[in-house]
Amino acid sequence: MAKGGVTRFGLLVAIASVVLGVGIVSVTGVQKNDRIPDVKQYNPVGEGDYVEYAKLFNVYYSGERKVLMDGANRTLILQRSSETQPAVADSRSMITASVPAAYAEPDNAIFIPANRIIVFSSTHAAMMDRLGIADRIVGVAWGGGYEWYIDSIKDGLKAGRIMDIGQGNNPSYDEIVSLKPDLVVLVGGTGMWEDKARKLDELGIRYVVNSEWLESDPVARFEWIKFFAALTDDEEKAVQVFDEAKGKVESVIERIEGLDKPGVAWAGVFKGTAYVPRTDSYVGKMIEMAGGKYLFEDLPGTGSAQISMEELVARGSRAEILVYSSTETNSTSEIIRESPLLAGMAAIKSCQVYAFEPWYWQKLDQLDDTVSDVATIMHPEAFPDYYQLKQFRKLNCDLQQK
Image (cartoon, rainbow, N blue to C red; front, side):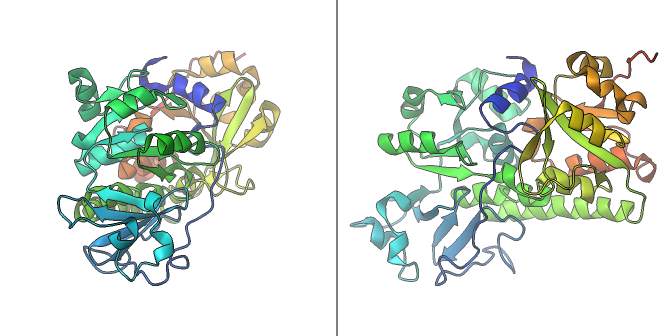
């Protein structure tokens, strides 16, 4: 596998995973208070709701205990570990009377704070690193499959503090069992987590489902940092990090307000099929936030859509900017060698083509940098002091024009 997790682009398309940072499946949103009306949602470290933007998870609080709605819309009781709470006779007594007994089934209880965590995605590791809790990670999927740019993970793998559990679509359950995890974090999306969950259930290992990549807003996606914080009792740090990043994004949006919107195509190609974000994906929203006009805005839903190469060229012909969602591609000529039809796209002819940096998937916790990059790509005149893109790079324009 190539460095930077980028053959992962091709591999994860084949296994229906996160191809463009938006995916090809979707899940239903979490109902905020309807399912557990007697449990109040509040911000444990301030005013207002703890979860403000994300639609695919939520956290409720009842005294010292928490109720987590995870990315598979499962209701989980986050219970203090036996070291800090009196022993209980059964799971129904783990929660206060304000939590309906119907949600206190044995399989719903997870002990917190979780200190030994296995993650199935680099984005999970990135968010935990941003919170300063990466030292709780004991295993990662794809640990030896590509180059790591998160120092805590890279150093942990090298020192043997973190173990590689194998490919995310075919993990080593023997390795998982040997690590004695408190919790495993699976990647959400229909068809992506269920088989692993069944196996973990057989092994008696607790898990949560993270569907951050299916959010319809980059701010909502980043808010999943609060998901991890709820599992480790780090809510205060999560709120601080989230609010700071959100403030920077808002300042970027203010700088481009009222500017003309360039046409933008965002696509990747795998085995002759193009994949483009749907309108309600977080990528589609990010293009809008950053002052662009997304040219595939009539594809409803989250995740991504498969289209033909001919459709990509025809519909993307008006694109002034092309974001080619790959971390391996370095030049326009490489794109044309793989997909000759794309030579006719205006953005390629005018050399306005960008791709991901090798560390892109491992730095999605840097919300402010990502949005700033996209806004700068679309409106360089508004950011004369922004000298260096951090998550993206402009491709070498070596296509020979005839």
